Length: 80
Image (tube, rainbow, N blue to C red):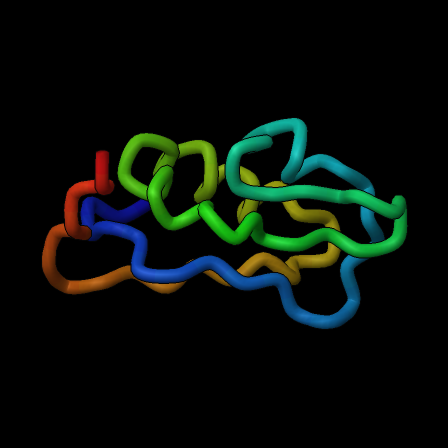
């Protein structure tokens, strides 16, 4: 784990839709059709608050397709 803020989260090809990431961070990950997982469109507003959960989901992914990119400066505050 790093103290640097999350810049982006992506899911690469090969996801098996196990829903583990959705169970860990449901405000960031979504499995709608039991075939594909997606990063929710508004997920970036939760990166700071859910950083540990997002990183845990990436570490626990059984097929290692969750990619988390960290920035070098603090993430901007979410809009109200």
